[in-house]
Amino acid sequence: MASPDAESSTAPVAARLRRARIGVFAVFFALGVGTAAWLVSIPAVQARTGISHATLGGLLLVLGLGAVIGMQIAGYAITRWGSRVVTGVSVGLTVIAVNLPVHAPGPAALAGALLALGVATGAVDVAMNDQAVIVERAYGRPIMAAFHAFWSIGAAVGALLGAAAQGISHSAGVAVLLASMLIVVIGAVGVRMMIPVEPPESAGAEAAATQSAAPGPAWEPMKQPSIRGRLIGFGVLAFLLMLAEGVANDWSALHAVEHLGQPGATAALAYATYAVAMTVGRLGVDRVAGRFGPAFVVRYGSLAAALGIILVMVSPWFGLTLVGWAIYGLGLAGLIPQLFTAAGNIGHTDQSIVLSRVVGAGYVGQLAGPALVGFVANWVGLNLAFVVPLIFCAVAAVVAPIVSSSGSRHPNEAVRP
Image 1: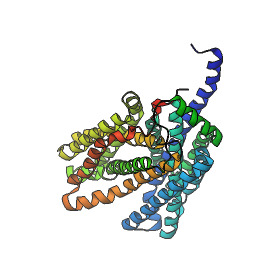
Image 2: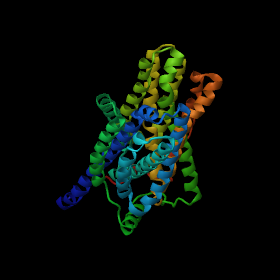
Image 3: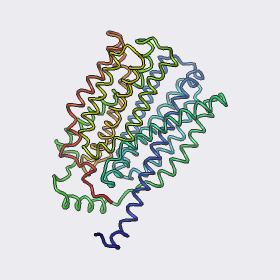
Image 4: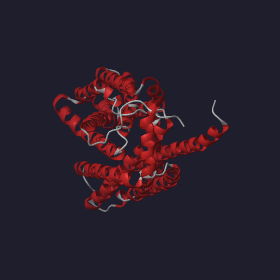
């Protein structure tokens, strides 16, 4: 039985971790709101600047380039100032940058605005995931998927807010401004609740204590071949899985129109079904990971996603197709969170840089998805082009053990506060 003094000493630590967890939830939610604020304003931005669909597609690549740049900058910045500081700065930049595209007068200005928005949101993405890994490790049990679920919830709230604001004011600028005000409030509160950076001496002492108290191999620096190999594996897996996620984002509604002859309004239910299933899955998958381990989630989640996309491909009825998209979303829900957790725990040093590489690789996959599936669809049709994510899910199922290799420490191995 623990002594009263021990219980009183651990109580503030537990309270701090609970606050930090709420803070990370808030920042994930805020970034979801910001992302949706931009997405719902795309039609208005295109009309304002007078650009074609082709030009818009090219400019969206500029946004993706900015995000990858921001991710790499954040990785190095976090090693110096910590993820709380970098999160706060990048959330502030996001608040400013998300307002720039809706006021761009032409294509050149829009390109600059999207580059800035990409850098800001990419930096937030890495910083908040780095903080999430720290909090999850301290909690001693999987909680990463729930953080990602709050991004989805924030995106839904941001989309509804943007649609309502544009309906009332007929101005995308007003809608984005309202969303950015919400980001300021929620983001600022969330950042204040996060865990501040620890002094290097404290971090080193904690690492030494962990290695001496816990069995298993010592943590290795990222430069060693075993770490480099796993980092490459994580990057490839992130690329494949986020490309698979992007398939539903980009092609689910169009598939319902072209393959099943559904009207546009009804076809939108395909993506909505997938998105809701993804959010629900992320709210519950942490318990599965805690009981059966991350490799179980990745293996059987990938197999479920493969089953879902097969059902979408063979279904002659829209209702059954929606079931397929739901299974696909549930299957994919926990995969990226488990991967980010494994990447963040690959070694005690260079955590933020590892995360920046893995998150960046996944984002490239998400950007490449529309082009790759579209290229295949030009040859065999959109329905058969879904064999691409099917193959990628199968590969993920085979390499699932990488997320629980002995080279990294899963949160279950940490000491519960």
